[in-house]
Amino acid sequence: MTDANKGQPIGSLVERSIKNGKFKVSSREIVPIEELKVGDYVSSYHFTDASVYARTLLNTTSLSYVGKLVNIKVGRDECRCLPTHKCIARYRDTSRDYCVYIMQRGDAFRVGMSKIWHDCNGCGPYKRLMDEGADKLWILKTFETRRDALLEECKISIKFRLPQAMFKFKEGRGSWTQKEFDHVWSEVSNIDDAKTAIEYYNRDIRYPYFNKSKKHTSIKRPHEVYACNLLENSEMMTRDKKWAGIELSTTEYYGMVYNLSVEKDDNYYSGGVLIHA
Image (cartoon, rainbow, N blue to C red; front, side, top):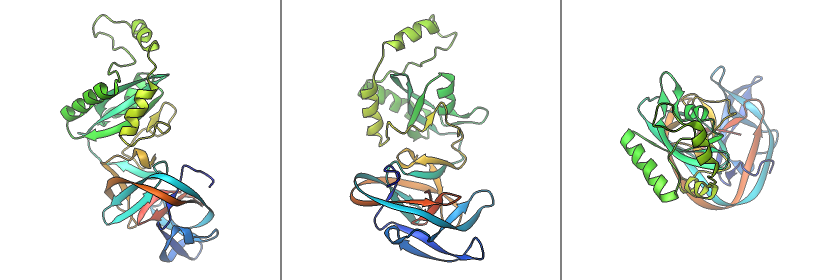
């Protein structure tokens, strides 16, 4: 497998296409992923002109896999993939939701809570990451009320022994100085506790939702996201080019997984859902 972190299980249904002219899809058929061959055409979505094209399958590889699969249900459509397979999603257009996250700076980790979206300042958790000069951030869960998010933050802090104190001291709050804050945090190294908490929420410590060098900062726009980081209130695109809410679950799996490499748009439809190749 070119990338052991990507793939879908045997039996996953993929849309194989027949070209009309140079690029357009004239007809299509649904086939198991293991039947696809290099040189076949698969249906791929082009975001610039919102069209579906027949793109060449450049490579297909397989590997035996033991572990969890993420099941993604979008309306009547459904696909399965490895937790570290990239999907294409966007967060629903809402300004009221909150999230609980774990943030990393150096060897120190903390738990926090923020509004998921601020109309003036954009993505709440990403802004927190940048404001505090942190390195990485994992969104664990989203909530419709601030109270529920605060309760979850408190529970995580107690259960997994993760501090709630910010990495960067806010001027005007108490008599602390940033130098004193930095001294306290320099004594903290709690990666094991953080890893346990992140895995508890079916996330992967190797794959944060945001990091300080990440180009994408707006989760309301379509973006690539690892399946293990998909949020319950996210939407994914169906074959009729409509965005729809998702339902997530996980299952244990033992068997072959297949990874596709697709030209140009680098995406394809599996189970009627658009995912990254």
